[in-house]
Image (cartoon, rainbow, N blue to C red; front, top):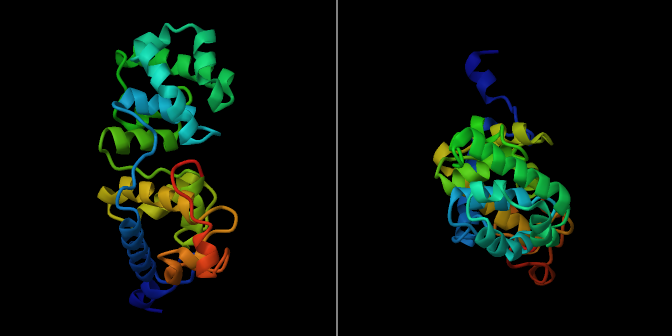
Length: 245
């Protein structure tokens, strides 16, 4: 077999050629961008420190609950130095509505102390530095890099991973592999907004259970069409708004 023919052999989860998959993936992204022109990170923040703390708090809870406690938290502890010196009980009381508040308090205090000790209280803007911080993995690091620093990154949360697999962009359950395989389909400059758009779609339309297939703008491009409600009227009733999903 010639090398040219080998390049055309299907090598993707859907059996498409890489070129066909790339074209379909980018078409899906364009259509979803039209559906969600205001897609963004739904955690409220004004600087990298606030987004980092809010993202750590968002584990195992909704953005709505995090946004409900962060105004009080940031008013009391406006920067890493203040948080590093915080009273543990007071922090626990403030963030209790987010769940797992003792473990999260421990992470936040260690995180703040590390920022003070190693980075003079500032949030670093490099992935390799961010992932060394207590409670910070690649997902959190990419959220901060993309939305606070403008450095492209793919945020593989549960919504992003689910949709990437449904769309046939990857068949991996490993977040790092998903990040790399999906990243290869798109220009790097689009990674952050791609993440925001897919997370919006996952929260509002392509639910984990009973996705609203009949009200989805990319239904004809989706290999998983039919996994949920296909009747347009019934599917419309399944659509959600806001970050609570």
